[in-house]
Length: 250
Ligand SMILES: O=C(CO)COP(=O)(O)O
Image 1 (cartoon, helix red, strand yellow):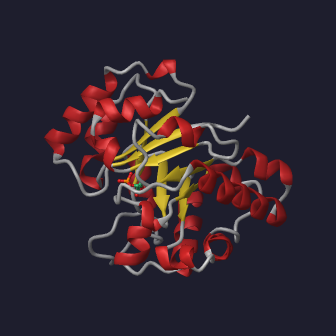
Image 2 (cartoon, helix red, strand yellow; image 1 turned 45 degrees about the vertical axis):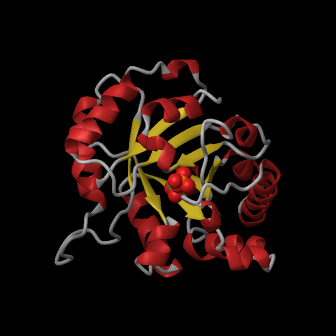
């Protein structure tokens, strides 16, 4: 059976105090009632204090980005080794905000994937189309190409450390979600693409998350779809009650 995951991407929100407050609220929730693995991705500055405060908790920590180099003159960047040293287990790679605002190319993302795996970091690799591509019915091709160029240089055994997050850009922070049927259709497509590139077993074992305006009132319906293995949550992950309710949807 595939791992079900609910991950909160806090993006550029929360000072240290706010992060610890949110964390303390989350620690009061009984996530053992859910079948989902819970991951939070706070901003870089708050990773270590959160790690220190998470002792004895099942919540896992992700970073929102990673630099592809080992070390050196890359002012303002954070290396895989640094992330590992502060208790990070997952990294988000290829978020649409990184692709669009920071011009991160497929080729760069491929390097980040290699760097993360080299340091035993697990990956949440994001793909998704913009509205024009959806309207032109190009979303299947767009997502396939993003996977081929950013991810498919790794081996089937390395893929065990990768979770895929499908996030249609038109649904991020807009309040508009893909319908459960739209999500299912493209998740099934992603699984087929994985099976064609690797093998059916590997495709069946890979968790594919949906992201884009997931809220307590729509999570259950989306997560109920056969190929949807969880969610990558933005806005709603900043509120402990909302996030916990989404986690409990499993
Ligand atoms: O980008 C997202 C998670 O990575 C989704 O954000 P929202 O849930 O705010 O739409």
